[in-house]
Image (cartoon, rainbow, N blue to C red):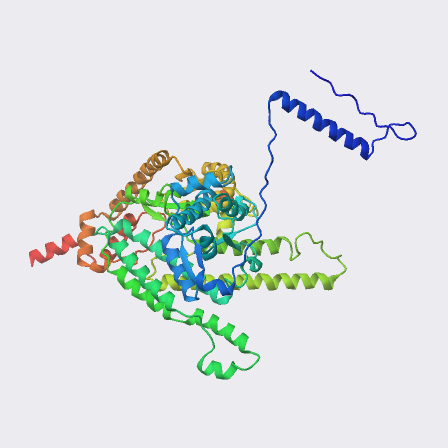
Length: 599
Ligand code: SF4
């Protein structure tokens, strides 16, 4: 064992000085010693190549005609409509396929280690798409020249903040160095410097995307509500495909509203032209009927699907992390299909909840900070003028967001109504905050924040689901935190059936078997509920079915069955409703049959 000689830097006066030269000596000797020890241990020093964000190549207006905008990460219904929305604005676009296990492997291969599961899937999916193009004969340069990828990003606090650099790193490692990634910042809109004018984030863009997402949400929700009860297998999927084609075509042909006719002659050449056009676009959005007319056509198509509400189906509410609860593929073990195959009715989570959550959080932040910018200090108490100014500014901003939220919800509800009222309305964010905050601080941002906990309580406690299934990606920080909080929730709400499942690229069998077990409990709950309904009404299922045969309108998915407080299942609610209807007519079918026979 060797020893290091003590460092004794001397000044001119002979005293020991700890100055720059001493620091240098220490550094040098430490480096020498490290080299000696590494040599002894046989460790070879390798050069470290840190990842540097590449200089972004622009996507310009001139490139639009030969550039395809890629996007993905939602359900095929949302993507079909987003596709139409972008096409209506004059963009070439394409959605990347739903990520599969191969994409996950590629994400691991080309990206960093230690990422959360959605990162691997989505990043690998883009690499896979680019590689497939290459396999079809395009060169890497052609791919980078003809395609850009459009995705959402954020500055954290969870790994979402790393997505952008992960895309770029994986693309670089796969040899697509020049591939362009356009980022829509969750908190600050699109980074226009990166997008240049290739993708214009104007009011037309936002309105078109908003319509696409809202319609996608409700079509998705509606299909999951009807499919488990369809009398003829495949009816719902057929109606869904036809309807999505119709909506895609209507949206694709829908051009952004511009000044025309009278409005053009009135304002066209004045300095108010811009404002008038802006207002016109909003009014067209709020009162235009073209999309609603198409949705009403879709309603007719779905209304014709015969359904049997007497089927005993446990209702499973899906929650969890944004991507894991939305994707319909290997990324969540194909969980929705599995649940339906096992006899459940799935209640999916709309993207609209997430949009409302983001707006809600901004309002909370303004309240918390009393309108002050990040890091700013409040003016002295005697500067009433400044304080008032800040307060007024805050109120104005809050009002703007609240108005945006109100308009958003109005539009959402209009679509639900046009589609026959089958879709679920968006849950109030204050209600979710009230329920979730005691367990998970509502100001703790990242992932779904307090929503996972709050939704569990909301759906279980309000009798809207027999079971809540949280899909949590492997390596997801916010979901891991809320898992801890869920233990406290479950100890307070004893009756709830809550199952968190960690999604990853492997382990489908294990996850499915855990779900099967919890579903067994939920099924037992559903059966008991139906039994109680039959006992309370004194009816048999045969009598209910006979009544439905006499009233075929009850077979339509558009027929409204009131939700009775405390009764979750469709069958139990339906039995009670039929009993109430029969009471109104004062006799049961059997009695009627007897009466007819006697006559
Ligand atoms: S919420 Fe979880 S899974 Fe989603 S990006 Fe953040 S860390 Fe990853």
